[in-house]
Length: 123
Image (cartoon, rainbow, N blue to C red; front, side, top):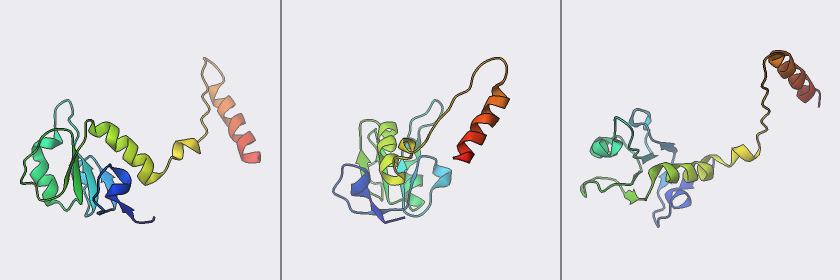
């Protein structure tokens, strides 16, 4: 995978290399770009110092955080939306290459899916 810079993913002047996109603090690796997400029971904005200490390259937030954070902090209006846009730039627009077929009904779904699989594999 080619080297991706922070400025390629988020509207910022910073050219820091990014190795992964993360929104789960348990999955942080050195060089990650971390997106703070406010959930139903947990808000990762509350542990931003712990997140910064794990080796992330930068943190994307939607709330005010401590000015003493040891990594670059990028403030956006909506971190979920920013993560969505960054993921397309980082991983590629894979949904444009995907085909989806839905099979519904009471009877014959399994048989129909096997028929479709055979047709697709034959081409």
